Image (cartoon, rainbow, N blue to C red; front, side, top):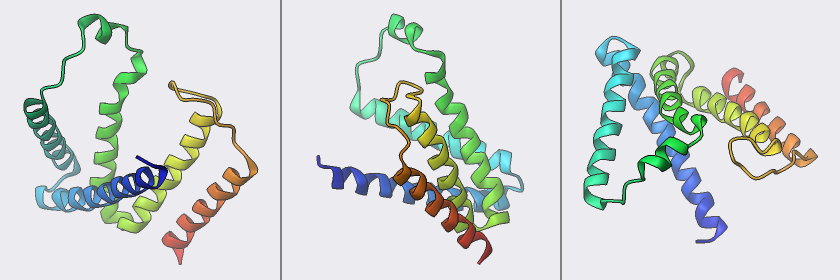
Length: 148
């Protein structure tokens, strides 16, 4: 695949995040609480992933591979839970556009630091003036979406 295809897939993933946040926000309202909304949303994730595993039947990793994996590889699930809970809780308060804009702003700042310092197994990609300018534009966009 080429870079344009990867970029389109990433944009589609962003659309899924916005749709998920809106769905979880309404789920929160219907279930009268963000914890149940997050719980049932994650149950749906587990069910979908389990069905995919049954259909695709990938080779399981060895016990040694699981044991030798860095501790921080295991934080994706808990962090995903926090993202789902945040969407269920905050979309109603902020609106979908402001919530997603703030999520993207947070992702961008964190991602720049992860790349710059080659954290969590990433290749080093130095922060440049252009990247700082781009981040400032996104942050400006976040402020426009929230306050204008």
